[in-house]
Image 1 (cartoon, helix red, strand yellow):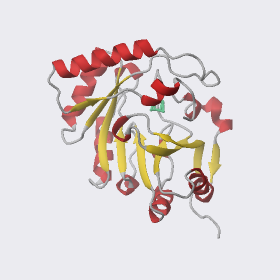
Image 2 (cartoon, rainbow, N blue to C red):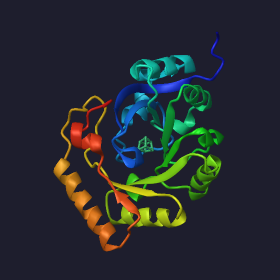
Image 3 (cartoon, rainbow, N blue to C red):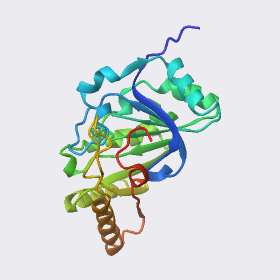
Image 4 (cartoon, rainbow, N blue to C red):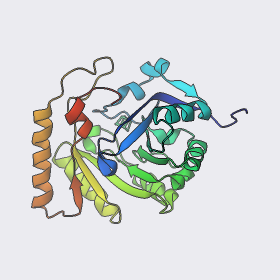
Length: 244
Ligand code: SF4
């Protein structure tokens, strides 16, 4: 049978491993990392899936091929599939989600919320991760709100915010106030992110954990009792290693 659905631009598919951050932390997951992003965050930890100089590593894969890879990796047992990137919202995921749901799989997508898709309503989990000032990106709040609206309250929607400093923290509080019904997950930023081809470079875990402690003190000191503060578990376990 011919696959008539649009192909997906894939950087890598890997797993199962555990989800390292946010609302699904610790959950066994297969990751589909897409290639390409409309942002260029100063501290991006996935440049190999963002920067055009790595385009030759990306592959336009038909839905059938993407799905067969997921099924092979999971041994045919339904597992959570994380759609990440880059910005996975750029890619045409509707048909893949429909196919996976038919076989009992679940789908989470993480995006900065700069591109709206009506198939967000087909997801099981939508993680909106607008980027704070330290990223040097600007948030289009109206587009972020449109992402929430597109999901139509069907998937679980959460906010995940990376915090490096006081102004990021203030941004996170402002974002939470804009979306009072969404659970908020905060995580300390990794100031020694991987550089493509040099993923074995050491990560400053002490610095990250100091930022984590500071963040806990900020949240508790502010009596911000419905925020959750989590580290990036995969960074604690594997540093900057890729595809874990
Ligand atoms: S939005 Fe995410 S993938 Fe894109 S540049 Fe920023 S951190 Fe990297």
